[in-house]
Image (cartoon, rainbow, N blue to C red; front, top):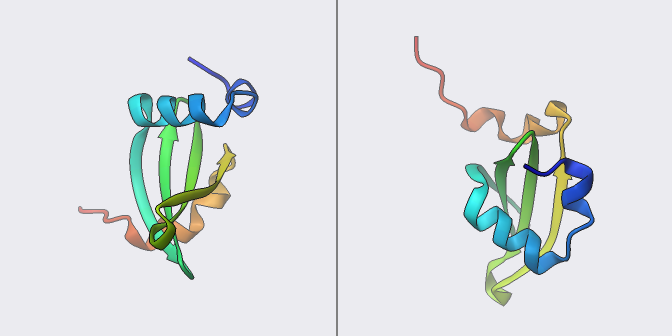
Length: 80
């Protein structure tokens, strides 16, 4: 299991492999032309900024601060 700091040091191709194999997809949202995919990986989160018309990942953002999950909260369905 990698820490957030260890993950940040990896080459992008290796990050992609780890996200594909080990991460849990949580949600997605749109921001302009970008689709932002949220994954949970070990004890932190990864946002993948994907531009569909170019079929290209623009950037990755990693974080462990749960306050940064706010843009996804309206997608969470809680049943009682």
